[in-house]
Image (cartoon, helix red, strand yellow):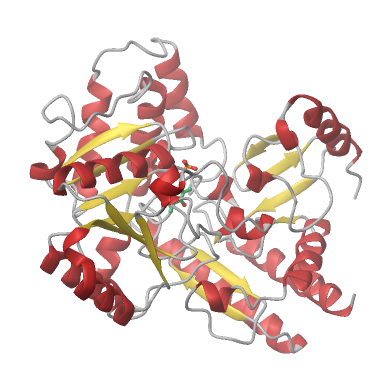
Length: 430
Ligand SMILES: *Cc1c(COP(=O)(O)O)cnc(C)c1O
C-alpha cells in the first residue's frame, strides 16, 4: 500500500506542529510508521491522501456513531452556518440540545455546554470542590478524564502508549490532592472512605473504562461507589465522555441503573464538532456562575454550529432500533474476532459493552490497569499494521476502544472478519 503522500505531509507537519500532530494519540508512537493523513471520509470509509480506503472502527475516537459526513448532520451544519457562526448571546438551539440531554440522561436536571471533554471534567471537579468545600478527589488508575492538571495522574492510554507515568508541568501541590485506586476494586474504595471519605470532594469514574482499552465495571462496582459516596457526602461524577449516547441513549447510568450526582459528556454530543457538557442535580448545578460563585465560562460555548450538529445527532440516536442494531452488529463482529483468535490459537481477552469493544493480547482476564498492561504490545503493533494493510482502521494503540457505527453494514462486518483473520495470522507468524 502506497503511503508516500502521508509520509511527506508528516514531515512537513513536524516542521510547524510539535510532533506533527495536534493530539499525541494521533502519532503512531506505539505502532511505528507515520500516521495516515486523511483527505476525506464518508459513512464508514476513510480516504487518505494517497487515495487508500479504510473501513473505520475508530470513529474519530468515538464521536461519529453515525459515521462520517452524515447527510442530516451536514445539512444541519450548512443551514446553521448560513445564519452566522457565533453571536455571543443565548440562542434557542442551546435550549433545544440541553432539553434533549436532560430527557435522555437520568442524572441530568440542568446542563452547561463547554467545548471539550477536558473542559467538562475540569469544570465538574471545580464545582464538586466548591460545593463540598473539600480539596481531595479520587480517580482510578488507567481512567482518562482529559488533560486538566488534577486529572493527569495515572491517566490511561495516551500516557501508557508513550510510556509517560504522570506529567511534568503538573504542580505537585495540586496532584497530591488526587488519590488513585485500582479500577473495579470496591473493597479498596470502602477502606479509603472509612479512613478519609469525609475529606473527599468527589469520586470520578468512567462507568465503563474506555481509555485503557474497554474494561467493563464488575457487577456491584458502580453500586458500591454510589453507596459509599452518598454515605460520606462525596459527589459521584460519571465521566461519560465516551459512554454517553454510546452504550445507551442515557449512557452507562441508564444501562447499569446507577445514578451519579454529576455527569460529564463530550464526543458524541457534538455530532463531530468540539462540544463537551456537564450536568446533574439542579441544587448542585446552581452553584456555578451566574447563579452561584463557582466560576466557569466560554466565549464559544453553546456555539450554534456545534449545537446544530449535536441536536441532529441526538435526533438520529432517538430513532427506533438504533441501539439494538449497534448491539447486534457489535456482537457479530466481536464473536467473529474471538472465533478467528481461537482458530489461530492466539491468547486474547475480549471485552465489549454495546458498540465499544477491545481485543487485548493477553491470557489474563482484563479488569484493571495492572491486568491491561500484561498485553503483548509487540503483537499489537504487528496486528495494527497488518490490519492497516488490509484496509481496516483501528486506533493505533492496544489501550484504546474500537467503535461500531450505525452505518456499518453486515457486509462490512464480514469483510472485516475475513481481513482480520489474515492480519492476525500474519501478526502471529511474523
Ligand atoms: C476523550 C475523553 C475525555 C477528554 O475529552 P476531550 O474532548 O478530548 O478533551 C475525557 N474523559 C473521557 C472518558 C474521554 O474518553
